[in-house]
Amino acid sequence: MKVIKDTNKKKIIVNSNNFIDGVHIIQKKASRISSLSYLLHYIRSSWYVLLSKEKFDIVNYQYFLLAPLYSWLPRLKKIRVFTTIHSFPVDSPKCGRITSFLLHFDWKVSSHFLGRIISVSDTVAALVQDRLGQNSLIVRGGIDIAETNSLDGGYYLYLGRIDPVK
Image 1 (cartoon, helix red, strand yellow):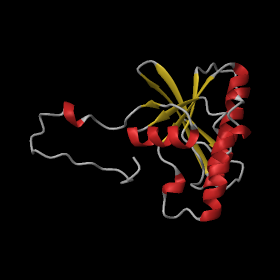
Image 2: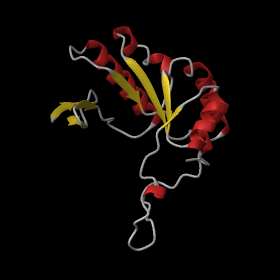
Image 3: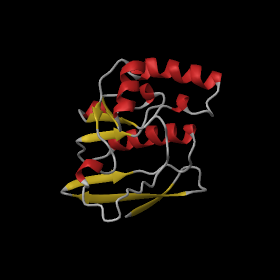
């Protein structure tokens, strides 16, 4: 486990190095939760990959925002880039007209820089096809209920964010 200070000198970012089934996973955590901090985090992490002496096989972005600013950096070292899309912010009732317009414009530009796209459900895959005009690989989170036919209590409890577009 490594601890480094963020450039804003107010937060400490914990970076973890994990080995799962022989795969070395390096996580760089963002300091705040907002669109701007995600963008800065993606840029900072992409430069880390580019300048690092470590060998990386894949970089996986957990959404895209202004992807042309950062997603090309890992490709300079011939590293495969994946983008996982969980949902689209414009589907949230919090998204206003101006934000919606800007996000739609960003999608049109960014869609050319995303690499392979991973969707978390059939619904999100359909939205990716409709909005970005691209196919995506579907990797569902959680468990397959059809395979859990031995539920003792006869019910399935789901814990997580309820999102109608997932």
